[in-house]
Length: 129
Image (cartoon, rainbow, N blue to C red):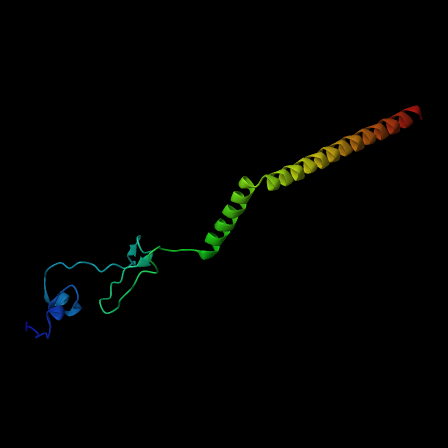
């Protein structure tokens, strides 16, 4: 069996050069089929030495829209907690809503009583015939 001449040390590596894997009787490592994921950068690790992969950002995946929503909710909460007039207005609105809810419940109770009275009247009319 004749040995080939290689130009660089990289070509002599049997794990990189597949031709050498056939020439040697030593067991070789299998190449991974699934990409390797780096949890610190949330990007795939580059297995090709000719490409350079940079992380997306230092903070990972930063979502500006969710940050702005959180900042707005926090600002509203701080305003409500520190402004007495805003607190009074909110509590009055809640009290009015509660009153309207109670009035609606009372109206439903009244309608239920009317329906029961109508059923009783129909039963009496059928029984008297």
